[in-house]
Image (cartoon, rainbow, N blue to C red; front, side, top):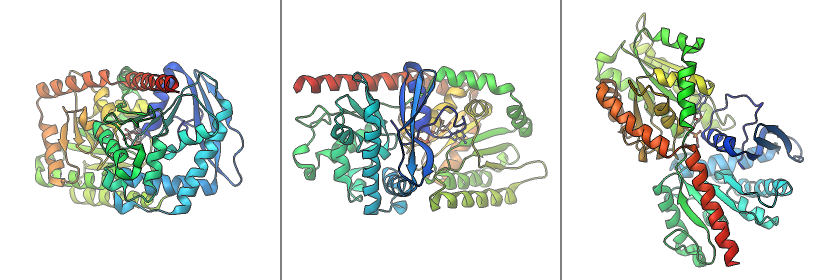
Length: 458
Ligand code: ADQ
């Protein structure tokens, strides 16, 4: 269950880590994927529409226009998203939005309940649906219910900015299992639920509440590594990939691929690239930076503003450094299908992944998976992305340190082949260990075990 469902006929070009992860996790074992179909309507939504594609049944519903505004654009994306990314300048709270958030969760629960079979296991995804377990229990559902948070869990001092944070913590305590990407997220969660104000719901050291078997743990999301590798290799001959390569004229490709979101650190990244050309002039006319960033959440003002800012920055950098035969930066405000992206990654000398905060960041992992192991490109990765905990062979940078990121890109461009091969091999090993199957099976095993303990205790 997730807020948004990527339906089979909805087009393959949707960008978003949750959809990529959930789809890959469902593909092997099958199941029902329940959530919003992306349409807004005037009245109240009817029952879910069911569509089956291979092992997956998509059960999707419409969202009423007011719910879209208050629950989705409002509380989810202008209160919870900024809080979880430590970006308080973007935070705003409105009680009516929170009320609508709860109402939509209750509605989703009522729509899902009749579809459930006795041996089903329910896996709820992300911050839009935190109250789902309590709503489903209220609707009489007794099956195991787990929750995975795809974004960071903030430090308790940041969380406290949200007036309703205690209600959300209590709601999280209704799940059998709550999962996070990193140890840091888990630590913050444990600290938050042991706070005095949560009172009798104090957690023990494992993050469980006495009296209930709720388990909190770390489940880093991964990839179908073979699939990425395969796509990267197979798509290389495709016309649009070849066209991109021809335009490089042998220059080193630096690539960035992100949803257009202020958490991805794009403004800072463009500045760092400009600084690279200033501080290391030898790179001028020898590198080409392509930034792919499709618009998301266009109903929110700040998201349309970033687009304009980036266009201005790209214009300024090109105006300053371009030559008759060289365009320093190409900014493409659009989505590409996954195989094409994988092939682009494989052609790149440097992958630039510098979010100012990120739960995990799958692009960082995809970049590594797509490389040729005998002559791999180098990943320049923000320390503030969850992926930095696993991808320690990347050139790690602080995205706010513009000179530091420029140095990092230069280091990546100058790295010997021997070092690139060895760093890449270490990271690929890690990707295989924590792949998408490991993510799903570890979470499911934890959920089934927790549910059995709860059943035994009752
Ligand atoms: P996102 O914030 O969406 O995910 P990320 O993990 O990088 O970030 O996933 C983006 C996905 O969309 C990738 O698979 C990428 O290939 C794809 N994508 C990005 N830009 C694209 C484009 N231009 N065209 C087509 N596809 C594009 C959230 C959290 C992350 C967390 C994931 C998964 O914010 O921190 O890693 O969920 O848990």
